[in-house]
Amino acid sequence: MGLEITIREEGDVTILELKGRATIGLGNDMLNAKLRQVVDSGAKKLLINLAGMTQIDSSGISSIVRTFVTLERNQGTLKLLSPVGRVKEVLAVTRLLAAIPTFEDESAAVASFKS
Image 1: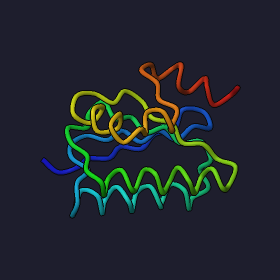
Image 2: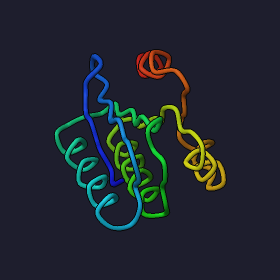
Image 3: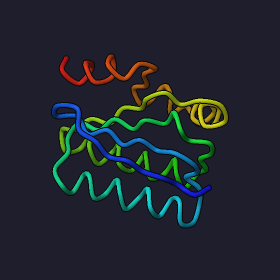
Image 4: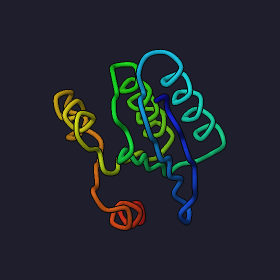
């Protein structure tokens, strides 16, 4: 299974729902392009829902980190939602769960952008 990306808005928060694999090649290329498109369109509050992610490698992590840094530089914010299984393990080992705000509940994540 490749990568499926759904984008929706919850107020002024842009939510990307990822399903499948963000690994080197087509999956990560798609993720990178979609993240760049969202940032270039002016989104400042980005929530990435990882509940449907089955695999991520260094290229997928790099795309998320690059977007996080870009948003921070432009007074924006990126947060993560519901990493599970192997994806959560990889994010924990790379210490991204400590560096990027991460939530288990979508309503709490969306509300956190307001404070």
